[in-house]
Length: 473
Picture 1 (cartoon, rainbow, N blue to C red):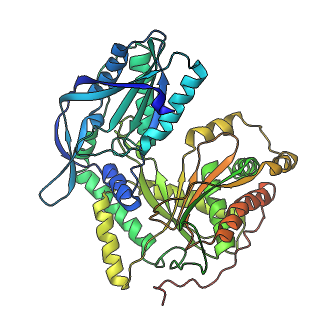
Picture 2 (cartoon, rainbow, N blue to C red):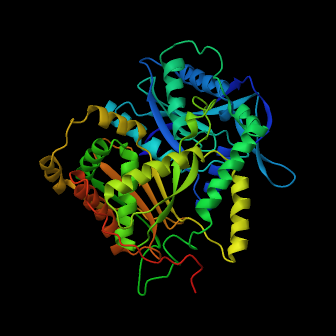
Picture 3 (cartoon, one colour):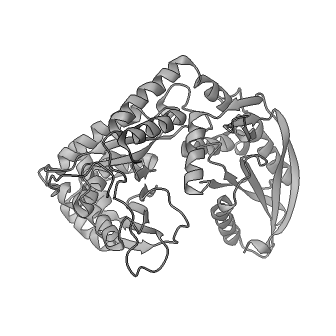
């Protein structure tokens, strides 16, 4: 489909208020390490409709404006003499704007679909961080006017929250024609510099004491050493999507009864289902924490989300008790999610040397639903009934997705940003979790949620057992 468009490229100049060479911020260090571990750049795509009658010059002004306002978009990767990554922020430069001319005979719906397809495909094209600006943009021209801009934004320049701020800025200052005003309260170089101050270095050190307590007794790998199943064909690293409107309603019912937000209820239910299916309990899991509640980070277009770790015990208790534990553990983990990743690597190396074998948490949960959950909790029915949940059970689905070439963790559970349904994408190592276990776990998430929705005493049905804390033989 993309071959149908005529392609041209224009050069767009920009200037910015900040320039210079800075170390990576903590958030940049974290996502850069994730990129290397997973052989994936995690770039984000987006699109926006332009006002009627927009010209190529209008699209160029839009690109120049955002590049000028946000230092993170003018960043190039640089390394120091020791090979440590850092960044050079350009005070001025030129960015390329792709002009894609759509044939006049394509109807508006087709043009919109073209924009959607490009938005999905373009983030798969890797950036050369030392040469490419971390923002690529294209203008789609149809019947003489530019109708859409489509972009790919590097995760090294912004996280998901920063991407939302980028879109808000684009709409407010360019598409709606409002004046840009002064610079944002914080810019990426300022964040990177502030993290070298003694106060934040102490914050990172306190986080390391928490991490050490969580990591000291973990097993070598969350789900044991990988073993290739005899006779298994097909790719090792697999992906499936599980969707359940019934589980979504059931978790809302649990959240309202326990007065715990649905994200932490979901975490408790996932931990319980893992315990039932695999016997791994307690469960140590990495979770992604949005650090934008911290001073100076609320409105910066930069990566500030980082992993934290928590442990949830689901044995010999009720699901409601696990929900309460998940809430407390999540609050503590959230307060210890802002740290220098270099310190964490040093801590892990020291613990591995003391243990005599390497160990790591190899299960990750990333809940992307913050805004969707808030809308569902506010707009949804005041009381979820058993009949409502039962009526949704036939809508449950489980589907295989395209496999992966590589996966650093044994299991990554992505809670997708979708309304009125629990949508889980599970990426897993089939040498660590068998396909049957995966299906049982995902259906177990629904089972646990439905059992607990209207029964405060619903048991986890996970019994205590001795879990080996040493390297496997």
